[in-house]
Length: 491
Image (tube, rainbow, N blue to C red; front, side):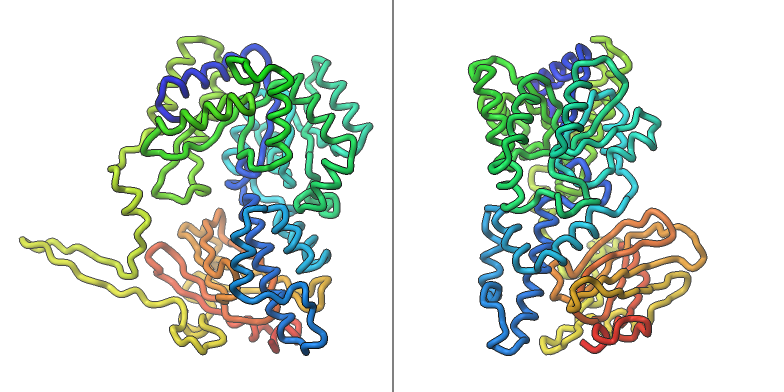
């Protein structure tokens, strides 16, 4: 946690508010990233890849049969990606790929029941009253079951009977807890709110959702986790709540756990903190992250705060509060030079090994073997770059291809396993065809197998690198799969 007097005061205020009465939890996509689900922007990139590929295939058709609405050039697609209006982009991608592919993407990404990550397990530990979420997946529900906590009963925000039951429970002293899926659940992709048309139907044309949320946030206090207030509907909602309750209030009504903007300069957070309080009525508690890792990949600062909150819910003591606060701040300190951010952004193409053999020091340059064929005319640039075989020692690379509702698209499952059933301890990096938006995908296995799922138009060669030192390479040409559909293998 950021070590400033103001930030620590806000943390103390949060703890005392939770001591008085358990708060309602409000979670966004950031609370589920370490459970294996993407952020909102991450899923938008998935849709961008599907739409760009769909448009490229449209160009292969005879000119008179092409759909002019999606025939954009490569530069135009990059301009679409740069548009800041995420809801419009999502709607544009949805129209491009069609409803069948869009719903299948939602199911494939969010319906899969992944193991709850540490964030979900920590949230399950402390005693919140109920939960409201904009997420589609059920990781927090399953985390409560796994941690032996009272289960969360799902509420459909569009069902008046269920909403009435939830509001009745707010006024009763009961162990019954509910989780409201404001934007739908993954098991019903047709009801999920993600694009412009969904938001218009839910918050503009409907007379129910907004008044319910307004009443909920005006009458009850919330702890917000994994939500960045970039959603225009909720940004307006918090402004309206704050205005009705008194915009001149000295303290915010709600609390938010959010990432610092600059781990090297914590004092820079005080202006954003002032804005959160004065504009939205929210008291932010800033936590740190390690700049040596990707922002979405480091949750240690958030975990330290959640672990401290869980302890303080059991021990309501000012002395313990000060001790836990000191431990959280101490565990979040970063001992990095000021120039470390610039150094970490550098990505050398060669590996330099220093060999000290008396003085002076000598440096050896070791060239890494490339992962893609440098020939620009190659249709399958991964082919032949990973040794040409799918099995080395105990490591085996396999894949399966199945048809989808769209005759032009196929679902692929690419799996790496240890044939001796021992645990995969090293990170696995998949190398796909460069036409994928994320042609390089690094994953960290949790058992003896790990699987990457993608949707593709035709066959290509998959390369796999195992370990940080690239100690094992595997290669599999998907056109050689005997059980794959003929149409897929021939492309």
